[in-house]
Image 1 (cartoon, helix red, strand yellow):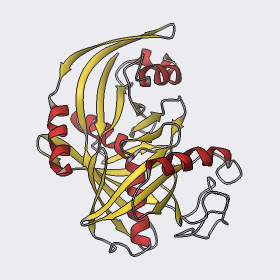
Image 2: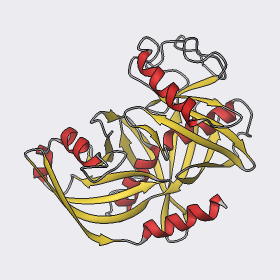
Image 3: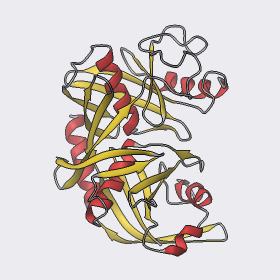
Image 4: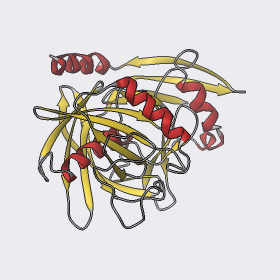
Length: 309
């Protein structure tokens, strides 16, 4: 099979277009995701992106975490899928589907020179079956979650996948790791797990760090950056409708939150192809080779170094 090693804001993936070869429908993708994501014995990534085509003709993304579990949505991943869909003529509808939800996507102005960027509109709900610590119909914005941390004030949001985010004066990765592990023990509060983020204010926006459900602390999480920007808007830390800069250890995106009858936050960011290759997965064994180096990885590193200054 053809594989593409790609990333959005440093959140790296292995992407496979399963629409072109019917035999790929029979691959054990859960086992493939676990094997390919392994950074020591596999290819190494934060997850697997499958480009799929639904019965009604809409193309979409099926994402699997490194542990083989499915993620309903991934903001960084869907931009990579959008690039492939755009380049192969799959994006005529302007819609990609993930986790049963449709997302409007457009080709955006490049954020880093020479690397395509895409913008996805993400509808956001303030309640979800993934949250049991407040009642449906209510919202949980800037409040303490009893049993998780006595001081942090979290905002709970569903972007197709569940998030809790809290503002801090300065991000502490050890605290973040402890919170990520603690939610695993709080089955009554988070029956299907949750993504946990901390964000701090910066001159032009916010900086975010995330413990991803099924993956741990990653360089970047697109839906977490979107959730953090949305929470900051709900708390009036940033103005509604403003295009704010959201950075993390993997790079930079831009978010714009629109409030009203429905909360929608747009996420703009890169879709970088590091390399293109071929893989074989047989009897649980993975082998692969890189056939084309794109040069985009170096361009992105140059960009990250420039914003780190």
